[in-house]
Length: 173
Picture 1 (cartoon, one colour):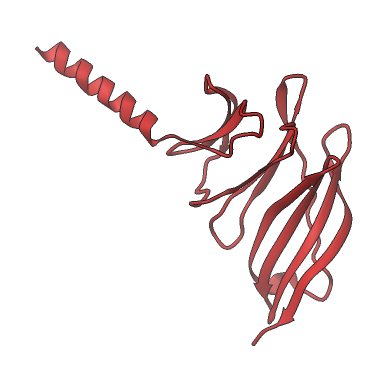
Picture 2 (cartoon, rainbow, N blue to C red):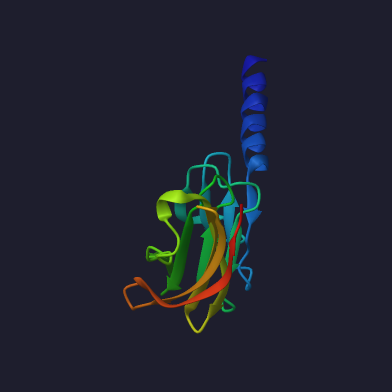
């Protein structure tokens, strides 16, 4: 009787753990997605759920992270939705595997004192011609701001800001 109880408990534990996992941000071709588990987010192949990149985010990613795939499914940007400052990562698929793209540090205009910034969130808005448009929204030092950064990537995956567009800038009290 005891082995049977152990087996049932074991199966319940495995089933419960899998039930907590959630597929989010499926690629346009349906071949890839992010698997949001209790302790981490992983990039997986579908339908097998084979892990392609383990443990991408091991901190709180928030309720609704932003996931933006390129139209052909070869690139993806993932931004957390939590905290006062979020985190973004980008990946590219080449020769059947994914590698991390290196996002540059986004420099705010000199009119904004970075020491006064209270919160800032980056959000991927568009992939176009291999470039990523990343929008930064923030508040601090008496201003609310939003800037769009177009980032191009070289063959090694290193990103470089090629243009900056002011989307919103307003003094607040």
